[in-house]
Image (cartoon, rainbow, N blue to C red; front, side):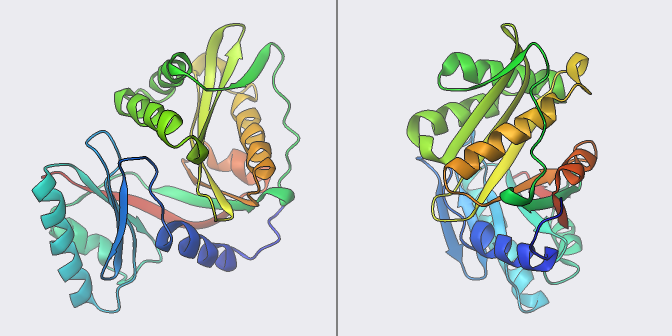
Amino acid sequence: MPSTSAPAALLTLYDRETRQGAHADGPDDVVERVGRVVRRTAPAHGWNGVVWSGFTSAEEADAAITEQIAHCTARGLPFEWKLYAHDLPADLGRRLVAAGFTPGPDETLMAAEIDALALTAEVPDGVRVLPVTDRTGVDQVAEVHERAFGDDASRLRRQLLDALTGTPDTVVAVLALAGDVPVGAARMELTPGTSFAGLWGGGTVPEWRGRGVYRALITHRARMAAARGYSRLHVDASPRSRPILSRLGFTELTVTTPYVYAP
């Protein structure tokens, strides 16, 4: 079932609420607007980077790039410029590369109005979905992440534990368990005062893929978001998850690319 909002209108709302109006995700995060840039500064295990830019000229963009490089270099931490395909100037990605940033894989920004989604996915037989509330649950989320994506999850473990203990109203994490074995995990980031909840980190261990675990985790989080007063969802979708999200009713809005600077 398609969203009832046009993609352009959803994208405009997303930019205004989640990028220009970005909020700190943890107790030690700082979000600030510096000129035509909104950036987030966090501890070493957190996410540091630019979430929005609104340049009116190439010269303005180049000056801001230089300023952000100086900011991250002074802190000695990797810094990500999260670039969206509709950001200006049109060659901003090329300018970032020329300044020393390295682009990562593209992802597709998708969004939906919750009440327009086809939330009919049932939990597979033998699987239950439970909220994560303690360190044991966080460790299980990290275990699933490492098995599903092949990444080290030490930073994720620290970030999630910090959020659950310091700002529990900004994050939800869930586990899919087959018996007592974690087979899927996902989280949802919440920004009070906005209409969007963000879906992140949805992953299923290899032997359980194709059985509906990922869809069940989307449904579970969507219903939790609606119960907390959120009306829309957004997700940075990989090529693997994009077809599933499309079938559920998510709309493709734009492409996003992470550009990372490592001082």
